[in-house]
Length: 159
Image 1 (tube, rainbow, N blue to C red):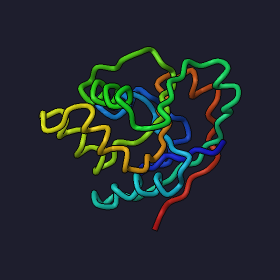
Image 2 (tube, one colour):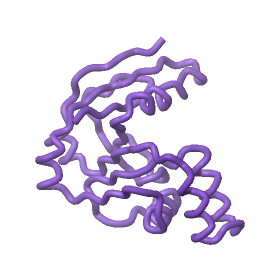
Image 3 (cartoon, rainbow, N blue to C red):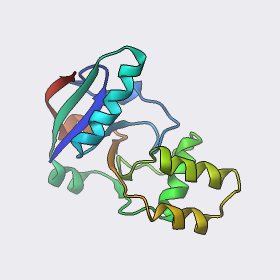
Image 4 (cartoon, helix red, strand yellow):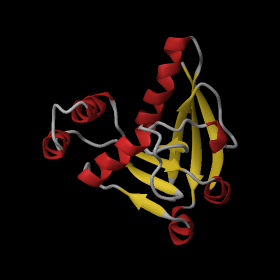
């Protein structure tokens, strides 16, 4: 399986020690199988006068799924919402090596914020989210899983 990462530099050896805590699935190295999504992630750096780079990786998905602890969210759900909120509050839940699921993009995050601020209950928030098409991300929360199953292939500096 091919995965992509958008940044301002090529990342040949992903290192989760450089990651932040309070993001969608907590501290980890984030990738996506959707090239356009990685391009969008990388494009954010152009606004900061930095280059945009998409790094490409090959994931040995079969071996990883046999040997790693994985949680996967196929749809936006109450479980996904609770997980995202906990992680965004720097409360990493679970000891999962990899978390796979939808991205809390701007539109999705607006709904999450409205829920956190009490404008929606869980049912209303999930009802609103069901109309959003989830973009997919893989968050590698274990360095040993990255080292064993994710192989750097190349990078592309975007114009």
